[in-house]
Length: 55
Image 1 (cartoon, rainbow, N blue to C red):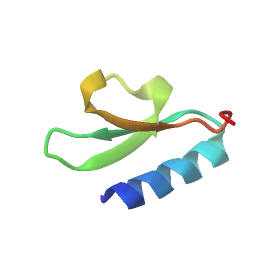
Image 2: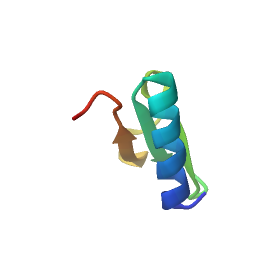
Image 3: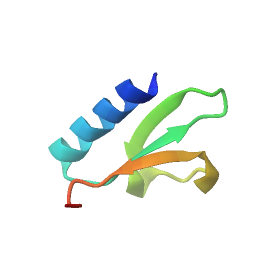
């Protein structure tokens, strides 16, 4: 998934679920998104976070 696609997907999830979403780079180089409370990977793999409560 490209970064713009991952960001759009993360933003959509964050606003729908009202949770912080983490955008991360997997071991094979692809980007993925997951709710922050479910992410248990390496902090260095995090590309960005979408917080629906941030102003």
